[in-house]
Structures are given as C-alpha cells and as structure tokens.
Length: 264
Image (cartoon, rainbow, N blue to C red; front, side, top):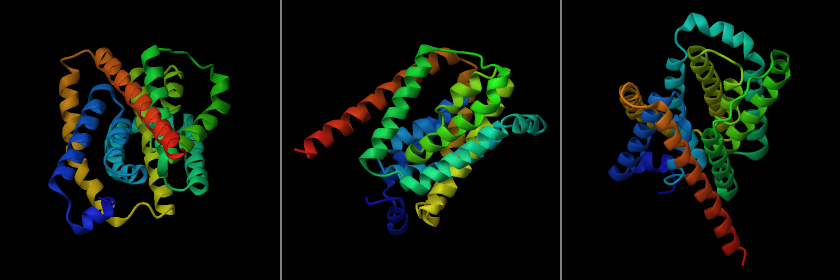
C-alpha cells in the first residue's frame, strides 16, 4: 500500500478501510466524551497505516465538520473571534510558513515530532497543571502560542499543543472553553488543509475518502456523548492521556532505535 490516493484509485482493501473507519470511530468517541482528541488520536493510529501527510489529509473533513459543530451556539462565537483573533492569525502564519519550509509531514523526522507532541500532550494532561494567564499577557502571548501551534501542526498534523493549555489558562467558562477549542481547531484544520494543498499532498481522491471517514467519526461522537452521561470524564481523560503518553514514547523510541540501527 503506497498511499491513500493509490488505494482509492485501484480499489481499497476492505481490511484497510475497516481499520481506518474503526480509528475514526474511536477518535470520534474520545471527542464526544472529553470535547477534544479526534485529530490527536486519529493521527497517532493512522500513522501506523499511512504516512503522516496522508493521515493529516484524511483528517481534514471529519475534523472540520466536528469542530464547526462544536462551536455552537453561533452568536456566542463572535466575541471569542475578537478575543482570540491574534491567536488564530498566528496559527495560520505558523502553519503556512512551516509547511513552506518543511514540506508535507513525511519521514522519520515527522514521526519523531509526532511522537514528541503526543508524549508532551499526554504528560501535560496527566499532571493536571492549570494556571490563569493575566489579561495583559494574553494580547502578546496569543499570537506566539498560535504560531507554535501552527508550526507543530504543519510538522505533525496535531494541533492541540500548546493551544489547549493556553485556552485553559484564559479563565473561560466551560461552554466558552469548548467553543474556543472548536474555533481554534477549525482554523487549524483549514490552515493545515491549505498547507497540504500547497505541498500537493491533498489530492481529490483523499478528499473523497476523508468524506467517507466523516460517518464513523460522527457515529463515534454520538457514542461518546452517550458515554459521557454514564461515566467520569476525568477518569476517561486520564486513561486517554496515559495512552497518548505511552504511544508517543513508543514512537520516539522506535524512530531513535531504527535511526541508530540504520546509521551503523
């Protein structure tokens, strides 16, 4: 299997399609329970099936639709857009500059960066560290955080770090925080799609398969929302973060071990 486009053009193996659908269902379930995690979980698992650039391309439609849905109610979004506008501009700039500089996510370097991002995110989630950022500092830190988030997204396809810790430090109420994450993830998804298209890594065939993957992602979200009413989100989040930490460390060790073996 050389890639998603080739699979789409020559007939997709049922086992591969079932595996990808299961990944998006699981990622959607996570998002339904904790309000985030679809791109993070999906990128981590899809990286075992396809190269990072193709995994990121598959994420575009499910991530965009689920995050736009997360931004409801719409009238409350505009105050967040004004407050977080600098951060969103930083996301776009960081994504596009790094997509131009680094190219599409590929190779062991991208896999290493993805593993580091997952490990750092999982470790941060397990520590439970929370802080409130003073209002004067938000004006200049927002664009910097956005740029860093965009740069990491361009390299790995994951756009939760450092965006989510920053948003949680703004002192937003729960509903406003969920909307703010939806806004940030939507902008990140659109910026990443543009970066992939710039690097010719977003073919039409992948768009079609990405639309197909929206169905299991939405089914997973519905399942996650059902589960959220019947289990502790805190327990689930801790389990998720531990899993991401372990997966990220395993990816880093694998890349470093393979690189050391190959260099001999």
